[in-house]
Image: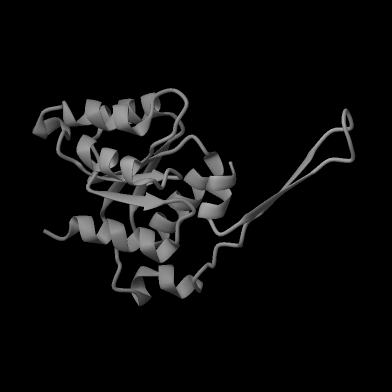
Length: 173
């Protein structure tokens, strides 16, 4: 836990009044800076995702809703799923232009999900462009994301402009 907190420039402290009296963990994380709303408005930004169909899969509902909001503000058509299995079902029913998936999900991790998607034929979306969204920041995790077929990897918490820029880059041939 300490590693994850420090990775996000936070601090963690542990105190206890004595044996058998419990323990208090205090975690402090910096607020994520939010750019002005104008940065997310496609009419005022070169990062316009109008007409782009995006499927976002993440079991953290608050994060999922934030990512969907950011992408919709940039003009994208966004579908969401709170489990990898639900996301795979939505994917096979209507393959998106871009897939964004969390790695650490409880029902099936993002690596397994991507392996299943990459096993699909091209006409069924097997070569969809994909971004891994993850709290795992190690080099091994980064390499594994690319090995299973993600083209990009973004660490949580996510900056709105970075997210829209990453999606825009995948759309550029």
